Image (cartoon, rainbow, N blue to C red):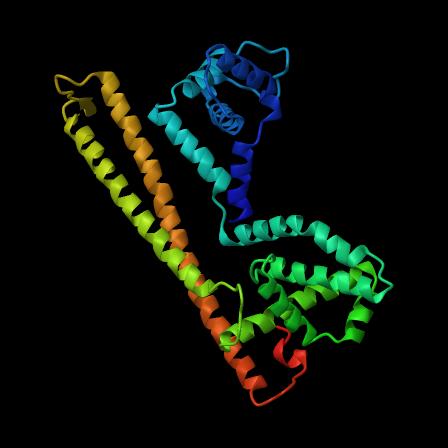
Length: 344
């Protein structure tokens, strides 16, 4: 998602410091009226309505002492008052989508940050502790194994078979002297070496799985991704069909109640006997709500198609690389890691 798209998203969702006096008044108003609210939605509604010139909110003159914006406070409070209002549901949908929709790169980056935060303490113990004895070295490499399994998604770290297989993969590329050298590195170099070890050991376990050897605890990721794609696609398509049924019904109802006056060149409403003007407005709000739902559902379908294309490309690249590795290592009992893990 581009910075141009991110900017209005952040601007609309974050609290506006200039509106803080009015925010406090709105929150007090909601509490007096027993109106349920959540702050992100309140910020979103306030930022949207502040753009409406009818409220004459001049940010450069708005201060903590300024309390003459009752219309604005009432408008925000009234929007929040009715949980079943199509308008509020539409705004809540917009707020949720802006706050939760991320493109693939953002999702990957966010996942990496979360994983790094969760494993920070473990990684810190590996790269910070001084190691002198053999037992201390073994303890460090037990933590290295856990670090590899968790960070590279190689299985359940509580499973003994997963740990044992990862240990065998590590021992196949690191001798006792290599391990002794690792624990003498300074903090920065040890962290860089740890990242390399993660990738090499994960690559060995993936290669073993692809070769039909044991791969305890490793999920069939391509299969899981394909199944998830098909399931998500089916849900979105069913949802879209349900939405379009509502959209078509409401559109037909509005079309039946609207006519064009050729003589006066104006649009007039011809309401059935049992339909009031308020009912007519509610129908329009409902149509806007379902149209908004349609837009977001189609956006997700388009994004899913893009993700599927990316998945297929990654799978082809993945299979091609594994094939090249098989060609490089066949009939050999040993091969340098730089021949297998070629720099890209």
